[in-house]
Structure formats: structure tokens, C-alpha cells
Length: 225
Image (cartoon, rainbow, N blue to C red; front, side, top):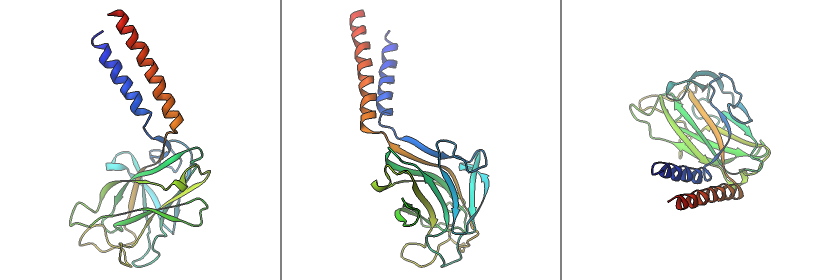
């Protein structure tokens, strides 16, 4: 009994924590070397003239999606990359997360844009880093962006990840110091996923059930003492 009680308490705490965890809506892990979601439903497509193949995934394990053929220097800002379409109906607190590997000649800055009509896109976040002589190009980064409330409860939500000029400039900057930007420089993606915050009623129900269960067990422990 002394050992069982701590284990049950740990289980109770785990249930309480999981009631607050995010719900996975859709995920692409590319391990099947296709563009079908590995979890959930949605579509993935290229935009702005980019091309893609499959290559090594995050930290070069499994499979990732290698995109290239980005715009020439000083051209077509915020137009090229890829687009996702998912449903967030009945969901709120939407977060996009992904892993990306920057080729040494690829742009060091990328933006996340979102839309509900696949026409008018708004910015949700920008990721830019200072290039270094080593350790910035051919390197994996993990990214996460919380989408605005307007992305909640949408039958069709469209989100793009695109290359953009270095903030404050009208040109792209290569990801590694000493390299020149080249539109052929690839970005490789993996573990692209959308998640949501559980509805308050769901979290409350899970937590209440856990509390009731714990109370019943505690009563039995007291009676058995």
C-alpha cells in the first residue's frame, strides 16, 4: 500500500496536467513520403513557384519535406513557400508548430501568414536570426506561433509559411555568414502541426472526474488504515 499511494497520486496529477494540454488537430510528419497528414485532416501545397522533394527529416531522422526554388534576390517578398488548409471548427487557441532546416544560401527570415478566405492574408509571426560563420546554415530550428483569435472555429483556415526580406531591408539575407542568398537554397520542414486549447467544459469535466476518483480512493485508504 505505501508504494501504491504515491503512484496513484502521480497518476492523478498527470490527469490534471493532461486536461490542460493542447489537443492535436492535424500533423504532417512526412514519414510516408507523401503530403497526406499523419494525424487529422488537411491539405498541403506549394505557393509562389516553389518546388519540393522528400529528404531526411528533423535532425536527419525519418523523412522531411525539402522546399526550394524561392524568389530571386529582391523579388516577390512574402509570396513563396507553402500553404496549409485545416479546419479549426469547434476549436480555439490555435497554435502552429514545425521544425525547419535552413540551407546556407536560403533566406534567414520567414513569416507565417493566415487567412480565412485564401485571399486576404494577415501576418501571425516572423522568425529571423543573425547569420553566423557556422551553426546557422544547414541547421534545424523549431518554431511555434499562436494564431490570432480570428483563426478559431473556422471551417477552412489557411496558413502559409513564406520567405521574406530581412526586416528593414528590401533584400533577402543568406542563412550563413559569408554566403550569398540564392533562391535555390532550400528550407526543409518536418513535424508540421496544428493544435488547440481544450474547451473549458472538457477540461473541467476531466479534472472533476479525476478529483472524484481520487476522493473515493482516499476514503478507502482511510477506512483500511
